[in-house]
Image 1 (tube, helix red, strand yellow):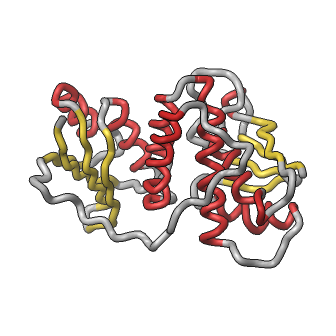
Image 2: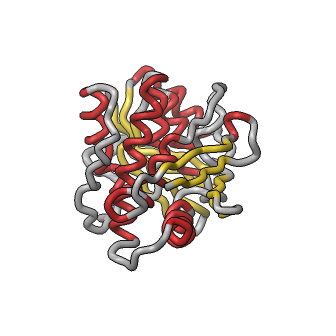
Length: 252
């Protein structure tokens, strides 16, 4: 295994980390750290990655010729990692609801190790989530990703919205779920449903609603001890099934 530091310059910030992170993962590497900043030449993204020697040439060629990349440099970190500003103290992500269980002990250990990284990197969380989704067996994806989403949603609620006055479900969707989801996706309300236009979990060449993490996160934001008792979050439209948007409705 080898550790490498990549530095890219781009004219575009939106979608840059997600696109290059997916390329890193697709070539068998792990993204260890990343930092994005505005420079005189454009948007500068520094990534520290780890992976096999055998995939290095292909990864460097992929990143260096990527349409979002204007310039590209690669080098060994030599014990010096990119400077990453320390995140605010986030504490532990809250425990899941009792109805959520993980498929296997191995998955549980991996996910528990992933949760602190999601808290640290939030809202830049989709790269490790997509890596997790890809490695899970198809029958494990929904329960595992809903579990992670619920944990993250409960943590975001505690961090950004609690304590506060009690709201009915409609108010909570408008004043909690919508602003929270807008931190990570393009979201809007339509007739009581929350609609997402750019879910990264769609178009895997499979059929069926697939935004399990987003569903779980909405449950964590709106349910549990602080929210609506008996809450159900239903994905009634999904781009994976050919819809224009992914839409979530709430029942309690």
